[in-house]
Image 1 (cartoon, rainbow, N blue to C red):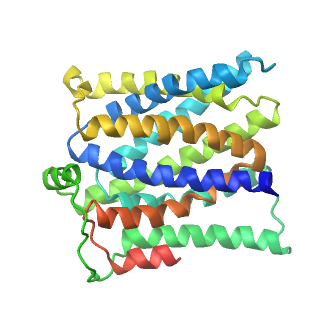
Image 2 (tube, one colour):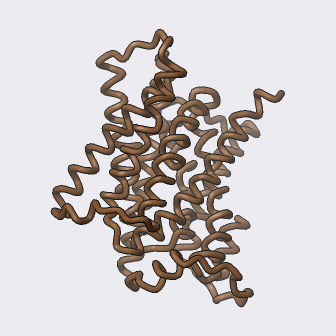
Image 3 (cartoon, helix red, strand yellow):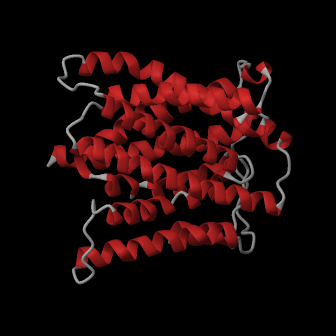
Length: 314
């Protein structure tokens, strides 16, 4: 009974870690940090953090990295790290952390549809479980679409007693976001969820084909993605100064999201996908919204609208 609960406990902790990642990333981006640099640091730090763990836990593994496995890891780095994170963080730059998390609730629906099309999930509408899957997919999509397009009236809640100087500085210096830019950001975040869903499918395919070394595969994937994002930064930022880190929120953000948001989270999710499947892992994403909504109000001074409560209750 205890071991059966481990994947559930692990995924709850992963979502709590992702909630912190969303808040810290938003603060770093609001100071003007390049999203491509943030993502590159994130993946390179994750790779360096995981390499010793991969050696310690999997050095005696009989798993062989064949050309096919290496190609699958490469595509994992494209969809699960580079494409997913670039779209997400560029979108996060023009929207709030809470809205970004709300849109991330489309992930279970996208994963379910892809898994069903590829026959990784069986859909039997006449059974209770089959109906529940389809109904849950509709609820995820419907709830996710409420917050971006319906804010509702501003709710009067008490002011947060927390005043974190990094958050106050980032909030005050952040550029105002126009309506059209926010819509573009919302679309980018939905596309990032589609890329992430593809990563879930690739991970499941790797596990079913017999490759089960999550630390090693995540290490290689992270290092590949770090190099890819560094190339994107070189092409788009064209300024070495954007890589500079001080003893401030930027440094704290890249360390946290590199170690927790990528290093630990991706390894744990890979293990959970192998244990329980891609749909099980994606179902926990709504939990992050509740945490980020609370932290966004408490630290980022985000306004609470009726739409926020509707989505959380949804």
